[in-house]
Image 1 (tube, rainbow, N blue to C red):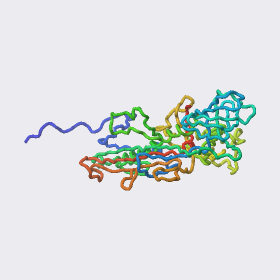
Image 2 (tube, helix red, strand yellow; image 1 turned 180 degrees about the vertical axis):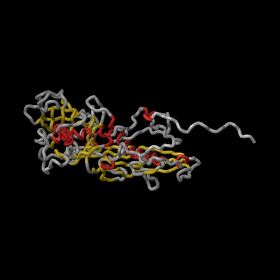
Image 3 (cartoon, one colour; image 1 turned 120 degrees about the vertical axis):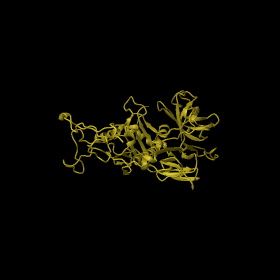
Image 4 (cartoon, one colour; image 1 turned 90 degrees about the horizontal axis):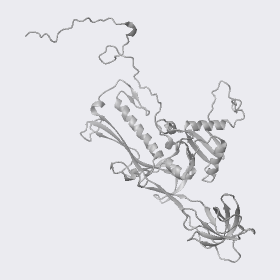
Length: 473
């Protein structure tokens, strides 16, 4: 049988002349005889990329059995109305005062009580005794103690608060009684999901780059890195969802959407939402002077007066606090003071502060979530920015609330997470594997699917004790 001429044999030379000045090998494919020098281990150029840590530091987790978590918070002990008006002119000895405060149904003022009446704009005031009350119209009659009568015109807004009572000898007791009133708050858990999938064929492929993740997992199987990063990303979302969640308002796109029956439609009340609506808000970005903090302290005096507080801040806010405290040093303008501990010139100089006391104790902690450029760290700052959060003041310790599930008072951290759980189902952090690869034998899918699920919400108790620092009024 004759040998075919094609394909033939090669007679071309195996060597060629090339210019040495440009003789650099750039084609490192698997057919090339030259191999590149390689660093087997993947370089972690962004360090620890996770942002979760905030709730682990300040909160706790506890189970819940319901789609709704409700709790009661105490109201004020004393009564004060800040939007009132008088029907009397200046110098009048008596007046009928109308309470116009919102959400008032049946004023808590009774005959015989003594009241302090003050004009909101000027501070001019009178003291008087209540002679009649109409709870239907939210009005009461007052007779003034001062001989000169009412010190202000009745057209301006007034504030009224009770400071005592006075009765004649041999009279009957106080008419009527007051019932304690709680404020009821609630929140609803949301279901958070994620999934990672890899084909069985790719699971059998080994790589030449050694990969690692923040949880310490290493190896030459690339799918391990992707699975671990999915897990870390999900754990971050468990925290950031509790921080950023907002409820779906009636008539909103979420509440009315019908495009996809799988996605949620109710939302939840996250920490920022609650503090922004029921807490205290500093709208000037970062307080940079003691007088700024004095105004914050003055507000805290009017709230729960919690002794110890932690301020979680971004980097710029942290530096502003350091600079503010350093400026209190009398040597700050002319150089660095060596201080109490005799810091010599060879020691590293610590220019940061971990906390300070001014009326209350304030501890400072950097919050990575506010610095990460893939999260809130990439938002604009400055006078033109609106809504960019720079820090959050969180009261330390716990508070007593009436838990409607337990049916009794219970101690709870100011911030804590409630997750759905029962004796047969724990939805705090569920993970399971499906498919036919990686040890799973649940279906004929030639892949491994790692599923993640959690159902949870955050309870912000005593939001009036929190302070949110952000830009914008």
